[in-house]
Each structure stands twice: as C-alpha cells, then as structure tokens.
Length: 181
Image (cartoon, rainbow, N blue to C red; front, side, top):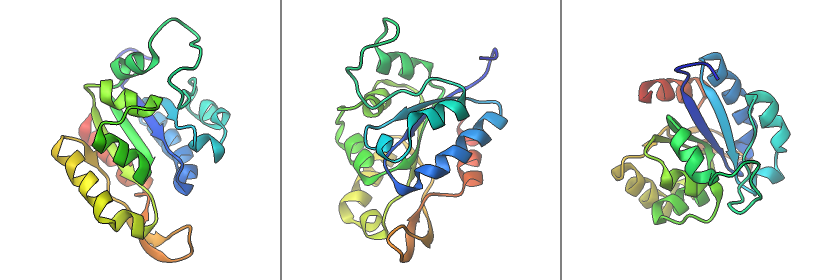
C-alpha cells in the first residue's frame, strides 16, 4: 500500500448487480484507492472471491465472523480501524435492514458497527422491495444516523420489468466516494 493511500472497505452483498462491483473496484483503484472486499456468505454464491481478489490485489474477507484467522487479529475490528470509508455496493434490503436494526451477525455488519469511518450505501434490488415501507423506513433511519446513500436508478431489473432499483452508475458512486473522502 502506498503511503497516504485511502482504504476503502467494499462490502458486497447478494444482489444480481454484484457483477458491477468488478468495474467499481477497477475504477476505485484507478483513482488511487486501496480496496479491501468483504463479501457476505450469500454474495459468494453469485461470484467467487478469487474474482475480487484478482481485481483488488488484496485478500477478500468472507462473511463469516468465526473463520480461522490468517493472523491473530479480530477481523472486524482490524477492518473497521483500517477503513477510511466503507462502501456497500450493491446493498440488498437485507443488509440495510440489519444495519438499521443494529444486527451484527456477519463480518460486514460487524465491521460497519465497529467503524468510525463514513459509510456509503448503494442499494440494488427489485422496485417493490426498494419502495417497501419497511425498506424506506430503514433507509431513513440510517440516513438520520449519518450513513450516506447513492440512490438506485430506474432501469431494467433482473425480474424483467423496468423500475427503480438498479445500482447507481459507477461514475455516480465514484463521485460520492470522492466527496466523502
């Protein structure tokens, strides 16, 4: 890692938009950021960690909080301390609900809870899930707690309909990252 290089913890959850995280990692690195990926267990069902390891040039952390550590450190505390920014992209309704409720049952949610860094959340989900009153309430609660959001855009969703729920464009996410750092 270069001296004074900013560390971004990229939380990746199990949205079909996960493939867009690949170009996001490339762009973040082009901007000079070090990217450390934390994948939820469910995200690993969609893309293997080796893809993100190759793109980031760093070890990928799994969603398990009790994996045997490579070194003796408490991973979520070490990651939280390292973070200049935590970016969750794509963010599912599930991770948004967990963070809103303070549930810390995986590495990503524990890292967010333990960090003093800014958090930027980029939701991606079905329009009905995004517009659900509970999801909107969770987003409002997180915003009032100081978390930042890059809202989803309207486009063709995985279910085949056009609606709001597509992950924000990479350029928009990068713009927000730079604004926060």
